[in-house]
Every structure is written in structure tokens, then in C-alpha cells.
Image (cartoon, rainbow, N blue to C red):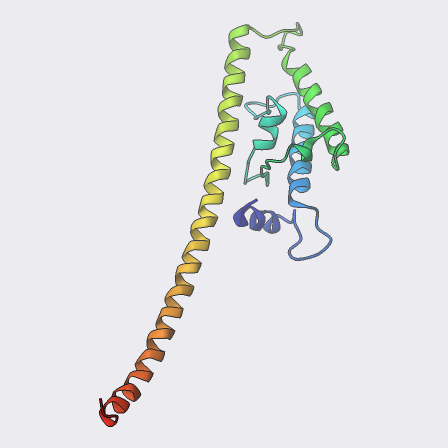
Length: 180
């Protein structure tokens, strides 16, 4: 997770800066995503809220405004992994959301095929967008690190030039005194 997302989480009070009491960033992001989906499942009208179509889309889901980050390890969301409590909650929330999505306002089950396909496409594009946003945040962090490195190298270069300039007069004096 990038430094910007970490700062956002700290500013929203979702993460304690530099303490041993904080959750791992992956668990925290997992928990925030599950809580968001549980809240959506409790709402009768979700509007155009994004609901991940798969576990892969769930792990790639990034929303800096809500404090969600992504992760690449499948172990984080494994049903028998360290976060199995969150995985059970996730499965239940997705089951509830999918059940609600299959019920149109009239109460009959099933969505038109075109609507389902369009919804899957939108969710797929949203997952791609989330992955690209995460990549952009990582690239921005890398650019910031490179700029810091460049500043450090420029400072070192100035220091070396200053040292060289302080040594050159002595070198000239020695050459004028010593026979060649």
C-alpha cells in the first residue's frame, strides 16, 4: 500500500501512526471493504455502488476515499487463512448482495441477461480502473522516492565539489614548490 493511502488512512483515523497497536494494512483494508459491503447489503437502495464480481476483483478493489487498498497475496482472503473471520463476513455480505441483485423491484427473481452482462462488464471495468488507480498511486510514490534520491545525490555532489575546491589551492601550491 502506498504512502499516500497510508496518510489518508491516518488522517481519517482508520490507522494509528507509528504504534504497535495498529492492524496490518492488508487486514485493515480487508475489514474496511467488508464493512462497506455489509453496509451496502443493509441498504434497500444502493444506487450505482460498486460490488466486486469476484474475490480477485475484491482484492484489486482500490478506493482511496474510502480507505481501500489492494493486495496481491491470495492468502489474505483465503477461507482458512489468518483473516478467516473477515472472509466469512465477506462471503455472507456478497451472498446477501447477490440475492438482492437477483430480485427486481417487482419481487420476481432474475435479471434480464443484457442487464447482467452489462453489470458484469461495468464491474470488470471498475476492477480494472481500481487496479490502474493503485498502480498510479504506487508510481507516484516511486517518483517521489526518486526525487528524494535525486536531491540527496545533488547535495552529495555539491559537498564533493566544495571539498574539491578547498583542496585545489593546496594542490597548486604543492606543484609550484616541488620540482618535476
